[in-house]
Length: 186
Image (cartoon, rainbow, N blue to C red; front, side, top):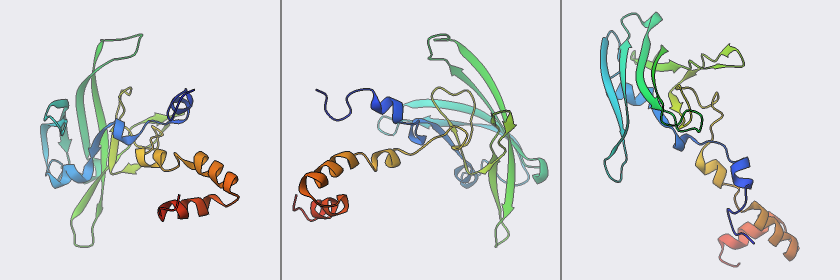
């Protein structure tokens, strides 16, 4: 009967991870001079698969930071639905995301996104450095609104059940099992 990963438990417990998403990083966009003070211009961003160089997604944007108090970053993109009800349908999305900034000690401005998602009838508006677009999502939003986790945090406790069982069989604590395992004694 099933080995590691068999059954339906994983799909019920596992949350969507940030690694599954397209990521907009305000720090990287600023480093690449796509977000900077006193500009209004348009451009595009592409995501590529590292192993093949294949373009996996692209997005058009317009940025306006002429007035830092009302700065924004507007995205234009097309999503192709993959769910059963709308499979293959395409939808044009235009999403305006507020920008805010903080002044660094050396006088330079650091730009941040304001999360544009509405959850439970309330605008998030959280100041974040990264916004995520999950495969089944329509808009970009923060990690908190999409309830995203990291792959590493899901893997961290993968073997806790096995370790607890070994500890019980051996009459020692799970911490001792881990220590013996690290030393190569198990």
